[in-house]
Image 1 (cartoon, rainbow, N blue to C red):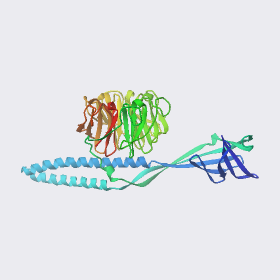
Image 2: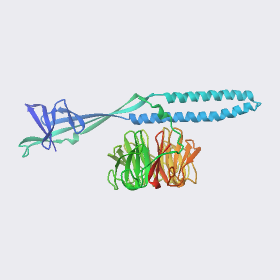
Image 3: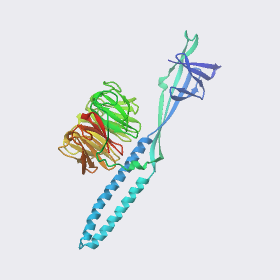
Image 4: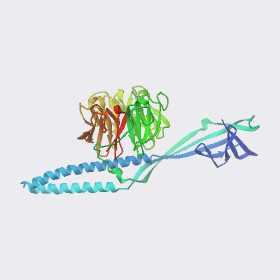
Amino acid sequence: MLQTRKEMKGANVSSGALYLWGEKIADVRDGGVVTLGEEMWETRVVSDEVLHLTKTTRLDNREAAHAEVVGNLANQVAHRRMEVRALDKSIAVLLAKVAKGDEKADEIGKELVQELAAQGKHKRSITELEERNEVAVEVDVVTETTSFELKAGFFSTLPALGKPVMWCVPVRQQYSTERTTERLALPLKLPADKLKSADIQGTLVRNIGSHGTGDGQFYNPEGIAVDGENLYVVDNSNHRIQVFTKEGAFVRRFGSHGTGDGQFYNPEGIAVDGENLYVADSYNHRIQVFTKEGAFVRKIGSKGTGDGQCSCPRGVAVDGEHIYVADCRNNRIQVFTKEGAFVRHIGSQGTGDGQCYCPIGTAVDGEHLYVADYHNNRIQVFTKRGAFVREIGSQGTGHVGVAVNGEHLYVADGSNHSIQVFTKEGAFVRKFGSQGTGDGQFSDPGGIAFDGEHLYVADHGNHRILMLR
């Protein structure tokens, strides 16, 4: 119970004090500031009965905006590199024709000059992008003002104090929050190494974890996400999230088996942005949002087939604005705002283009959404608004997890116990791994994440995480 005891000067009141359970917690003066908990509130003494409190908070999405810009630039670099490689092949063919004395040497020469000029242009563009160290990013800055009043109720003498105090209660109908948004162009530093995505060959760096229920141990790890500092792992059958450094040192865990806020029932997918973690709490048929430290923020969805409802969501991805959920048993992808408002759904049950049969893994980049369409044995690529673009893969593979970097798409092929690598246009590049328990081997790999330098794979059946390069 919050109390206030005010010093009264005739009809004018200019100062006083706030009490909590009889203990003074803050001096109050008109036009001053008090600290309540960890929050700063401006004070205005309206009368001998009313105290007005106001808090102003400024929030911005610069981390998410920054990450998206870096991702887009990395995609541009990757695209230019692909064009350079294509030109390399074309130039080699033209040079071979010239060497053989082709009768159309003049035409070949002109074409060769054009190809070399285009190649040089792309190489200069790559260099410019890689050396770029600053960019103007549009950031939404939200100013949130919250205010309410404490109103004197009645005087009462508490035996513990032996003196009269004035009880105060919040006047809830006068509680208000105002939000304004402004868009600013901020110069943000771009670390050049973020634009140079590694080409993963499948070489083992280290194993993380072992079978068990203790800290740092796993029982069927599923989803996996990584940011600049930490690795976040969905420990499926232990019904929890475990956090590690990227080098594999245990940091913390949170969650337990149950249906309450912050509890899980066989969670599967996970995604991370600049502020929060998003977990597909599969058999509770919802998405749960946490801070990176593990504090519960909100839940999204409930069991059902309607818009915004889920049936065994298994994958989740996030970009600067939206959450993309693989709604497995409803055979669709659902899109939400970060606050949990339903936006749209993508797909329906079937085998045709844009249809799904138990989608599991999801990933996004600057332009596209990538979906592991499990029972259709393929990856489907959509625009972020849901238009079908292409499919990758065919029968004989059981795609579960998917991750994307600037150049390549990495797919956890659970049924074949391997990782397959494709270009983002769908051309097969390589695969690595085989069934087994040894270093670099897999048993039903699932979740997969990429940090620009290393690939992290949730080795489901071997109860461990593999870090690869």
